[in-house]
Length: 314
Image: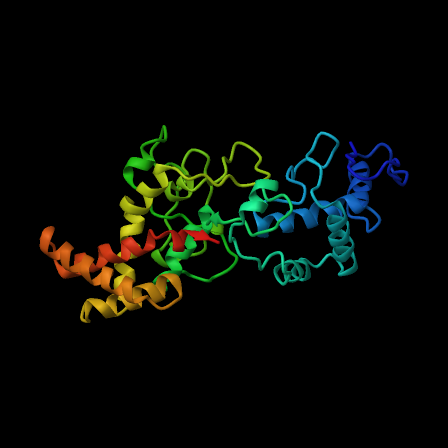
């Protein structure tokens, strides 16, 4: 019942006050878990925080700190983080600040042939592992580019609009799926109602965890369904239209459209080559596909939302 990875001595558990009460036994276990003398809890928590920022923990098997789990790559670092967490009164904000202000976290993802040869899995954290945005991050980032993201916190779950085809996958199409206002639908993805038989397609495409299973760490796959969702889903096309409106519409030059789109999506200025390529693309879409300029600008915005620079952190 008491997994160990560093300790060899048996845990010291105070005798329970009421041996006949299940609640009393649970209280004793809870007190032991949350005790400042129990370093295992602090190590597990510090490892989780590290995992959230780096994509993997110092102990890769986050759910298993026992002898069958993966050994820590940096046991002394994990011990130090655990002590800091306890000394700071178990305040996670301090732990986040400590990790994010470290040189290790701020390293680039630049490759090094010699380092790759000796440590291909980057177990020593000699660089920052490039990673794709997680499912919720993708959706929230898309909403943020056009100013639609609703920062409201707390409250009940929200229900994004789902197509009839998605609802048809249920035995009773749409059963148990509520109706949220457009403003509520634009809240952060963490508030989306999770129904095992009716998951949000965009989140599923980007490796949203299976609700039927525990998930110690997110998978980060790269597969065609993600590209198809980012190019063809109703949600992404709707957000591309809103992005056009947020940058001032089509009553401006193509060059200004490119500049404002890149600034809104990537938070930087467009390069000269990007301006040239973007204006050329908009003109060619109008001419070859025989579509309106408004539609051509929407498709350009859709293209920028699909750039690797938007979907990946390096």
